[in-house]
Image (tube, rainbow, N blue to C red; front, side, top):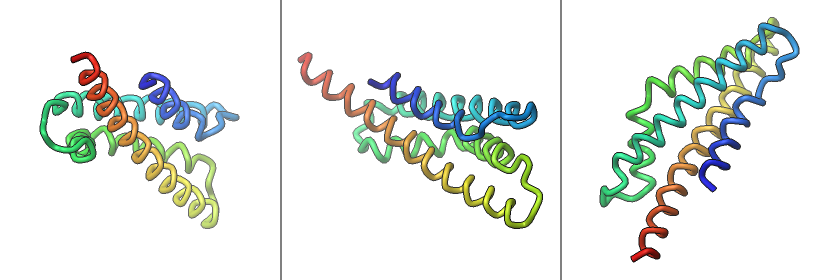
Amino acid sequence: MIPVLFACVVTAAGCAQTPDSGEAGVYAERMKAAGEAYTACVTGEAEKDAMNPAGVEDIAVAAHGRCWSRWDAYRDATSTAYSVGATTRDEKQFAHDRTDAHLRQFERETRRYVMDGMVERTLTKKEQR
């Protein structure tokens, strides 16, 4: 379940920009790689706190904070990928709005992925006892 959800999150990031031109494809690939690095970081950081008595949401939020540099790199890559070819003020505004919406959704889905994984592991451990 978890690998499938991770693949969906990463695929959504990679599909955000259609690579019709070479330049757009390069930026889309950079965005995808940065998204994978961020998701891997958050997952790894959350795993470190898996035995912490804090709630899973608190653990996911803390993991996001510890992966801020990767989040910042993903945010920059996404902004660049979405603004390729935007030349007019309206196109630039649309690219900015689209980037903002995508980043909110991506962060929310990544946090949900981490929380669901932690809950699933907790329930599996309880069943095994």
